[in-house]
Image (tube, rainbow, N blue to C red; front, side, top):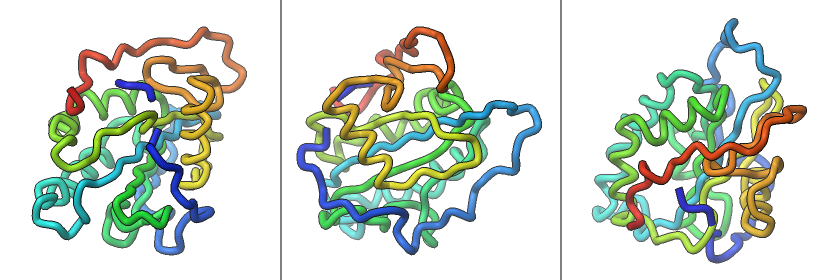
Length: 200
């Protein structure tokens, strides 16, 4: 995956939007998951067309199936969504083309497997048809206490930190995965490059 920023910092609306749902799709605690930490992720993108434009209908029509795939994936904990079941109408800035996607997973490896080793990858392969090419960082990972829910504001702040400072324990990427707080392991490269499609 390319490390790198949304070209313009949007005017951020703080916290979770009122119509964002935090009660749905939170998995019951897995007795096998003894970790004190989960990984949160945010990715952002700028649409080429508004969500009701026929030129982006193919993308919109795949959201339900892709989200259902995530909801059933091993390690999935939570995702940001509104009453319509996705996050495309949760606006965090004054730019209606700017979308955010957020989720929480038990570990980075589960997230990696969903992103790059399921049919989700087929959707990524066509993203240049629907999204403007990013000019910098568009995805960020960070550790959160298990059971907590991140906000879009927090995600955007982490993304900006990644953009300005590079990967660190505060905000990192698949190419430089940092251990949970208290861990002593060196950053690990999960080598997403062979799976990266859509921007070449």
